[in-house]
Length: 91
Image (tube, rainbow, N blue to C red):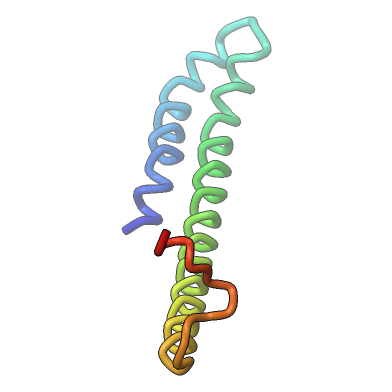
């Protein structure tokens, strides 16, 4: 479902571009066809980058979760406080 959400702006821009491109082709200026032609690609690339970042964030969250679990297990196996913990909370 996330991939549909991320790619929806690209599909919307594709539809808008296809609807406006014929009218822009009749214009004598050079930039409207170029702009409307590459607009969906820009939105697609942004969606692809966001999808990649979401996958990377999920991977990093899983990794942090595993590291926290390992830390919790190591803390329960040590009888006293960890060497890097200070007694500053007691003051």
